Image (cartoon, rainbow, N blue to C red; front, side, top):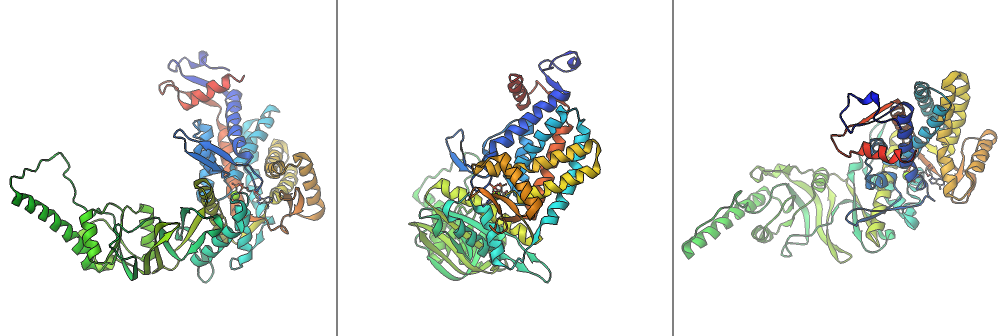
Length: 541
Ligand code: ADP
Ligand code: MG
């Protein structure tokens, strides 16, 4: 490994520098290692990972983005792949493993092209052309769906959920599709989906099968006082992000009290200040208060006397959802609270779920707001179910938006790879080799799926290519039955946008990594993540 040679004389002592092919080799190695770490989780037969953090908290997951996030990856190249997963998660909500695994595979193909003496700029150029073409080819094999047809949406949800929520996929897919139907807004031409209108709330206990869809917002909270009503019809809702308590002085202050009268006056004054605050709420006409901060005993007392339901320490994100659902404005200066700031719901009630109180805000002003209330035996089960439902919500929303799906199980990747190889011949030259490499890289999806199903990956690829040539583009790896099947008949479908996003961003990240031919890790930061990565890899020479 060439580190501190003559070339580094202008750098401060201790700085590490790796150049040229060596730098590329190391970066590719790290990229591949990160992708390999999550490869075995792909698809319904993928395995789960258990990650224990410094505090001993355990995460068991099959979700690429979650695993990479929990792994606390330090190396900048590793971080690029973590961001790739994060982006996929925020853009589509599903397909994170796919994106990272394809990036790893593109790097692997690039490595053998480099070994064969192809210049990085030819590879980068070839990958860029291939990525654009691949997106066209995905679109060619895509199938139109009818966003009003529950069955198609159910299959998309199911494809996304299988392998993540064990036996309860059907149930959860039902919930996701029903939730989506509630929040979908139809205009003349399009269906508009705002997935922020779906809240996911978790309550340990019972089983996933008993999860339910609530039309409205559910909060894992209780009334601040049992003297408050448990149920209010025609709720007028105030959302506050100010505390309903007497603020202590900023600095240490002593109040000197010399007589019982003075003490009484002091208490009276505090009382009247709190009472004033509650009076403002009463005057506005509110009968329900959701407060982001605290509500002290005295305030609780006055609110209860006024028959107001109050809930404290509501998460900011929940307050925002409530604002959207009920039409309320979040008020941060109590004095400003007016009737016009209040939101509406037909019913606000506290109900016991598994022996613990939860607040239900039903039939809101904006009926589009819904909550999926997840139940499950343990924290881990319920957390993984939440991630799975989030993926499915993203996938179904994406399919509704674009109205197009592709056939999964590696079918679409195989079809696109075949078309890319044909196209590569037309391009010729060195780029041809890079485009062929890109095609091979896409086949990592069926190859990995075959592996997870215990099939021989090489045989599976050969069989798949044959089936595609003779019988059409819908054949993929049927992991449930360990054979090659028509995956459209098996109803394994995914949103087209998921693939487009995964391919284009995986290809971008790979090109960016291949463009680096000089890595300089400064010593000023001591053992920075770079120098650690280099040390570690230097030892592998
Ligand atoms: P990602 O994070 O990329 O969404 P998943 O673990 O959800 O990863 O796996 C998605 C892959 O699994 C897709 O390629 C999809 O086509 C495939 N898949 C899903 N269900 C099946 C099935 N029943 N048979 C074969 N492949 C499936
Ligand atoms: Mg998925």
